[in-house]
Image (cartoon, rainbow, N blue to C red):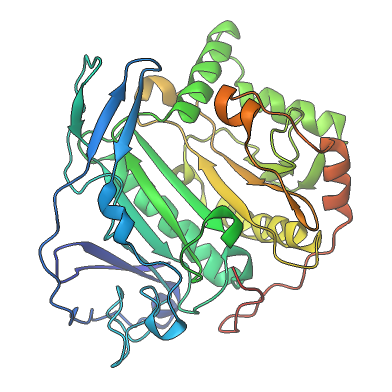
Amino acid sequence: MTFITPTLLSDGRELIYFDAGRAASGLHRAPEEDQRGLPPRGPSGSARYDALTGEWIAVAAHRQSRTHLPQADQCPLCPSTSDNHSEVPAADYEVVVFENRFPSFGPDLGDLPAHPGWGTTATASGRCEVIAFDPAHEGSFGSLAPERARTVIDAWAHRTEALSALPGIKQVFCFENRGADIGVTLLHPHGQIYAYPFVPPRAAALAAKAAQFLEAAGGRQTLMGQVLASERDAGDRMVVEGTHFSAFVPFAARWPLEVHLVPHRQVADIAGLSGTERDELTEVYLDLLGRVDALYPTPTPYIAAWQQAPVDDALRRSGYLHLQLTSPRRAVDKLKFLAGSEAAMGAFINDTMPEQVAAALRAATPAAPAAAGSPPKDPA
């Protein structure tokens, strides 16, 4: 059980506390007032339609002024103190979600034009949220104690369901950027949740292929279900197998380090997972991240992207929740950069053999899970 306590920041943005420890003790939270007296929120950015690709591009120039690698005593995600009134007014918290002060989409909500063309500009409606995984200043999801990681999963589920119900939202995306090599601007363990007014290109491609496969199979089998079964039968790219979840390096991996974490049961999004499935997801996901970090002597940069089904009911029937964990790290001191073929043409060339990466991950020994209330194991 988790206590969920919503409140508002001084500029009207929503903030929500997720407290499992308090729930266990029966202690409800009384939200503290935001002392900063922030000015009213600015307007949403804009979205421009690319007639050559059929894609929407968000223009969010206001994000140039967002916080960049602050000192620990000025971190906007740490609990507030008398010297640092942060984005979280409380003196302590477990997991907290709030609307991004520098959003790429929103705060306005609504639909994009139905028939855009060259020169079409619209309001970049939608919502962008920040989820702080822990009050500690440094770390990542992999440095969390299992109890805290489980609360984060519940928060992802809650926000996925709530954001999917907002007007004009077509896709909800939960993700974590980890490491300076990925472009992280805050060391605090956190992720983000985007609610898009359109289905992004990558999600649209996955959804279209999944729908096509389901129709060809007469509704009897999903594409990800077949891929998961095939990977488990082959075995040489499997990393972890549990009762409800398995992780494998995909046959056609794009990145030097890429792992997919997939539930054994078809479910459209994180909100659809049962309590038992969320319990095992906590264990398997932390184990996987531990193996990723055990490959090298320093923490591995990555993007953890939860691929959820679009909100559209027609696409949810074939949609299949899964995590795509990718890293540009191809050696101890080498990164893969997206150059000509990848960046300009979208044609990926992998520098590693998926079977060898899977074998290395299987052989890696994850560090012991963090204890509740202990400091983080690694800098993010």
